[in-house]
Length: 174
Image 1 (cartoon, rainbow, N blue to C red):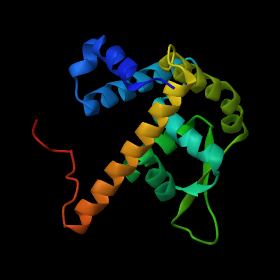
Image 2: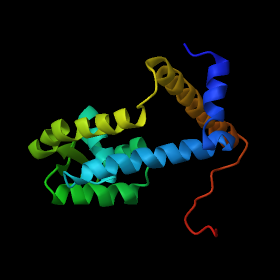
Image 3: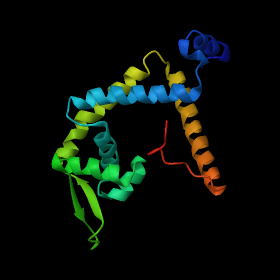
Image 4: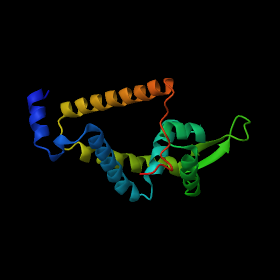
């Protein structure tokens, strides 16, 4: 493993060393998204569609509400993406279990075939991102990010218990 002094020296060599962690994580996420978007575009798939493909490849037949919850997106956003995916022949939506109002999304054969084309693109984007990091550094980074995510999720839950909710960003002045 890398010792703390080496980590500090490496960080001090970066122009981003004085940046706040939140900004660095946001910039890294933006870079990941753009890298993957460039690759997905070669298959005429959007980043939004990718999110739903990943979920449906794990559990096909989810409702729009379940998909929007798992993707951490609003239902109208999910509806738009799923409508486009249906138009492109990637999914079909149908009612199940006698519920006429709740539609579930199912991958078509074409949607399943895209998995073999799209997943390698995501792997490539990840490999580009971690280039130059040792395996130990990657493990430390993953553990640290996972812990940060859990901490921030707990912070939001604690705030809700205190009656504080995350305000919607739509309509907020900048």
